[in-house]
Image: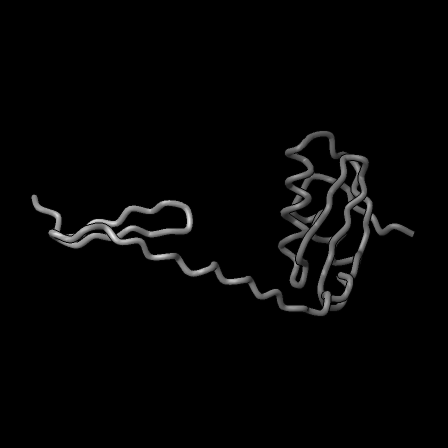
Length: 115
């Protein structure tokens, strides 16, 4: 197989050579400067907290997390084995009773509204 051209890169210089030509140096262009767009930070997400009793392990926590994340509007959820469950939304907060019902219906744990 015969190569008709070759390129060799060295630092900021590019050396090129065609078939039967002497290599010639060509300086590489400067890299483009990235453009950073200024964006207004999103508003703080709304937080709704409930209490869940009976969780003892990671599987317990994952079951409660899945039940809460299935609720419409929930964008993230934090579940602690101490029983604190927080759901976050970008829009209106989740009704705590919806969270309690979801956990009670979908898991074996007992959820309650934090007063």
